[in-house]
Length: 103
Image 1 (cartoon, one colour):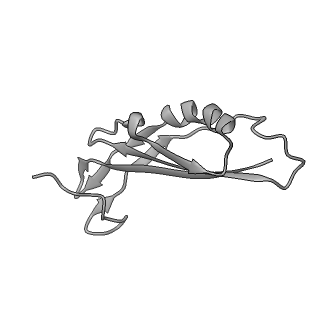
Image 2 (image 1 turned 120 degrees about the horizontal axis):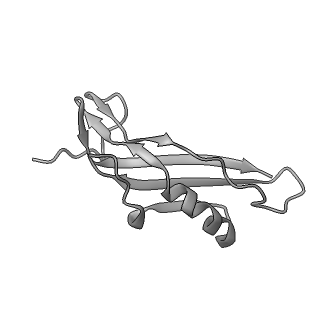
């Protein structure tokens, strides 16, 4: 039987969500703002019980332009994850990252 982790939250019944083990700094020059502007990105990717992200099924949302997303997408897809854990055992889960860039 496979454990369902989509409805569990961190700390519930011994569950730890998938988490990034390597993150990145967004590339410079993402915007041509005159200061005071920001771009917020949310990234969700299925992560298997070994920590491998299924980047083909990743979802990127936010207020970035298509050009900005194309510069960020390869960096997000290179991130590595610890698998979700349920009572100490690796289980499939979802890796989530949210960040804001001010420019």
